[in-house]
Image 1 (cartoon, rainbow, N blue to C red):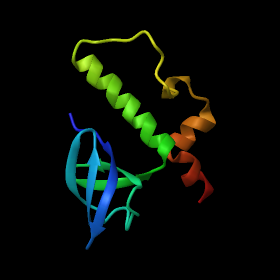
Image 2 (cartoon, helix red, strand yellow):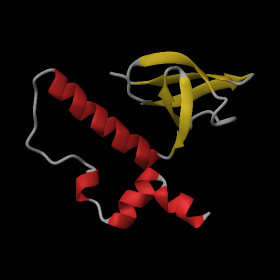
Image 3 (cartoon, rainbow, N blue to C red):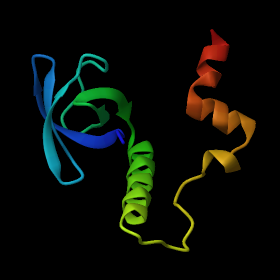
Image 4 (tube, rainbow, N blue to C red):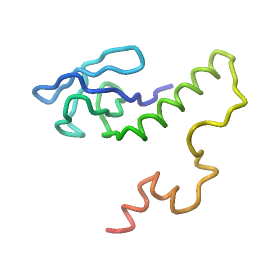
Length: 106
């Protein structure tokens, strides 16, 4: 299974960045997101940054990855996830999450 991982930019030059997240460092292509200042976060998939992340979105993804990792190790928690699942969202929130709200404006 391939998933995107939130990573913090440590340094960047020539369209590449050294990034760190979830206990690992990677050299990441930045062509899809452009220059990102040191300290900001990006979503990395197959060694390419595919999205710039604000702190709240990065925390949501980290929480989802933590839940997935726990499930893969046979652990479970009765606590609700610290974010809204798409099945519990209203139509406007779901459209914003999927980008449909933006495409409707154009």
